Length: 261
Image (tube, rainbow, N blue to C red; front, side):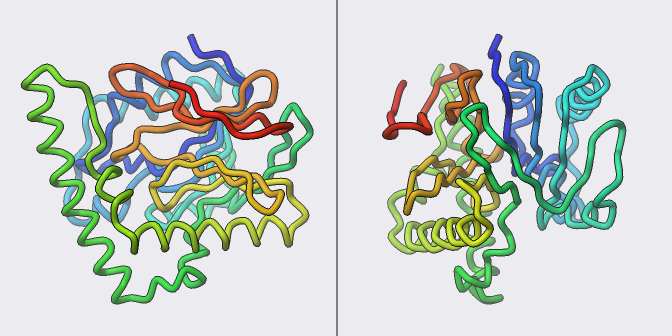
């Protein structure tokens, strides 16, 4: 059982064929927290306009979250661009789950974090329509390769490996876009007087201390399969949750970053 103070999840993309619902369900069943923040693209309404891919495990994820909310876990849902229709219900509750356009969270160490999905930074990153279209289609290709690569790995007894994330890490243009996105998020937190920012959107899990601001991206459940967790002592860590759960990065908020396997 993973006991923690807070869980941050985003980019689950329920209804999309590449949603790694089984891994997320296993994580939710083993994780216990006082608060869960859902930072957008939880349901992929864009993908479902073309074709709905909804497995039993995705139903169980929804049921698990609703059950946790009924049991007293504070759950805040901040919609993203793929589930932007939910933004119309900001300020309302859905089965004890509060819907908001953005939020804030104070850690056990007193750090105030800005919470949002992150699609508002697309213009600052210079994602024009042509770039966005090209990026979406290239990412679809990466997910296709990722899907078949991992099917072959399972047939040969291998564990899950994010081929998509590996390829993105080797493409200079992708790394430049990630850096511009990070800079925009940090600037937003700084202007608002926050100590840090937690977001999703770009499917790139990361914890970094930059310009005195804590930048956290909780990743996704399409290829990275990561969750950001505030541990009981207030430290933040990214958990990679597939066949074997592991901490891939941690940041004690009063010291330097560290990595652990």
